[in-house]
Length: 104
Image (cartoon, rainbow, N blue to C red; front, top):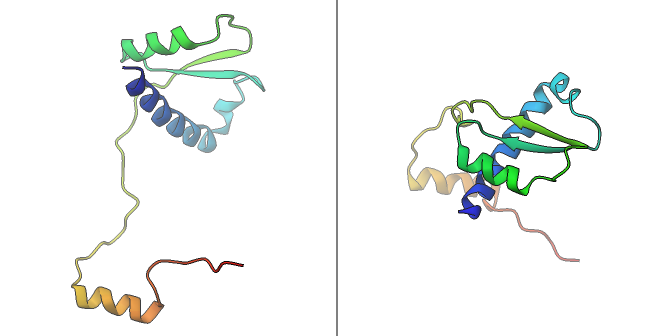
């Protein structure tokens, strides 16, 4: 079960990082050097796991309930179905479709 919670924490960490990047005023509430423990009030098992593994002293520890996550959205814009022949033309125009690094 801890692997599941570790994966959840990774997802929440990524989303929280995105949040504080776009909401810098929120990060001002977090003392410099503090350890941030991300919690989810809707998931008791995950929250218990995180509290169990959090530092035992609350000094320099900040607990954040992540609230509600919005839906995951794709960044893809205007996709279109193409044929294999059209795809081959892309590689002919632009060279190889994958980049290779020259070795020194």
